[in-house]
Length: 164
Image (cartoon, rainbow, N blue to C red):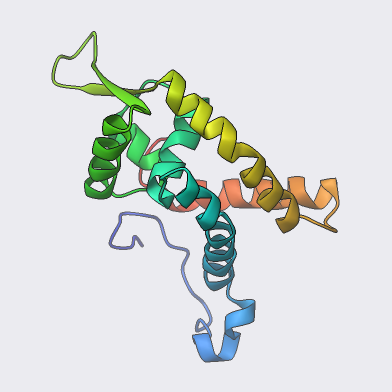
């Protein structure tokens, strides 16, 4: 059986407990949202000092690793809706942090590249990103971190809509 997104669903032999029975503190999607909310909140002041919002920060972070992505792929990697990304890219380009370049193989497609100023801006924010990351994993062993990351990768593979 498949859900509305075409993903294969396991057949349920026993009823799935309701959220009230599971409890918020035992419901991973709730915990993941809280964690990311705190992570983004911890960075908000530093991002604001650099004129960045969360979508802009995610865009710079992704491009610092995968420069020259097509806009549709950047949207997936940055986990930003296309319309929000479009506004963020307009502002980032206006601020000289990214540049749009027509794809050499498809003139209808546009690739996004970090400028030197964009890389410098990301480099200024990176210590704050790294500190927030380290705080999240304080007291958690390297083995637990690797297992957690592997679990998240498996979950993403189970739910993703895009091949990337």
